[in-house]
Image (cartoon, rainbow over all chains, first blue to last red; front, top):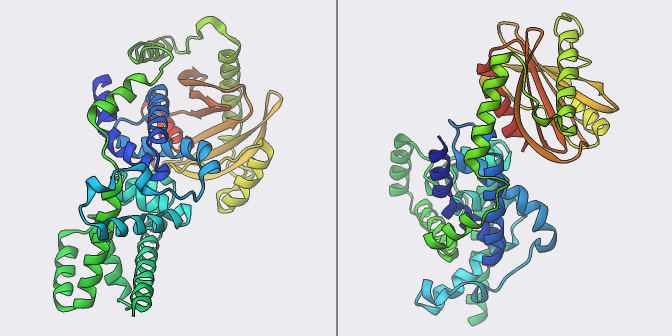
Length: 169
Length: 248
């Protein structure tokens, strides 16, 4: 049983780290969040129900730590992606690089409750049920936050594309 | 462009891999006939890929480093062993072992006794087991949160067959405590008591048998909890974990 907790914990770390990065857009902050989350999980492991999936439990702890520590100082902070990740390694065209930056700017501008929900599923690798449990909200609420987030990003991207085309003309 | 809301939902759920085979087939069929819906499907999928692409993928070595730097008070296997031993001794002797008699442990044990006393007093009340019924749950939670000095929410135990019947405010030493009472279809009742404002520490589950009741107590930071019922260790252990899970 000890072995399986350790193994399951390690299996969750990549998604957990990426979710932490997506919330903070900062490698050091993601490292701190994941390390603190692992410490808390090890301290509280006896409280974990073995038949339940571990990832939502860990994600919930990570969110609690993030909310306590990071949100106050970094709410709606926008980060120039060129400074935090190597976009050139991700994509070869300048056009796509601009699109990536533009989409992430929209993600950063989402209401916090929408971005936390969207990223929990897209980056955190949680199912709707798992994400709802991690965020302690009903599944219907989670889904509507995700759907609204996507629709909003899409509408804003369309809007800015239309403006660009008009201004070129 | 406005799509039928049910199609928009299918598109979004398909992007998150939430569709059943039948729903998938239905969507595929619809997209084949509706180019505007298909375009939206492709654009939203691309949006998801673009969001995902930017997030770095940590190396396994980096994560192993983080994992190994995580501080623990003592080696996990020792903590687990100690805790299992505590359960075993507690069950064997019919009461829990109180190692060292430290102040905090005694404190939790005293709270467990008060919880058992409260439960045994109110459990047999047919008409007034609680002061505020579950039908006024929001009011109950607000009231108890105000009196305890921190937000408390009645845990949902639906999957164990127990439903909230209500709660009341009680003294616990010189503090206020919240009592939530639950009942299952057989009429078995459980009480959960909670106090806030204790000196912060974590203590894992302690089981005590007291006068025919099983009491499970634990402390999570400033919160102390005791679950009391005349159930066996299973399902009490599971129910306590379920409550803990919701109280993180």
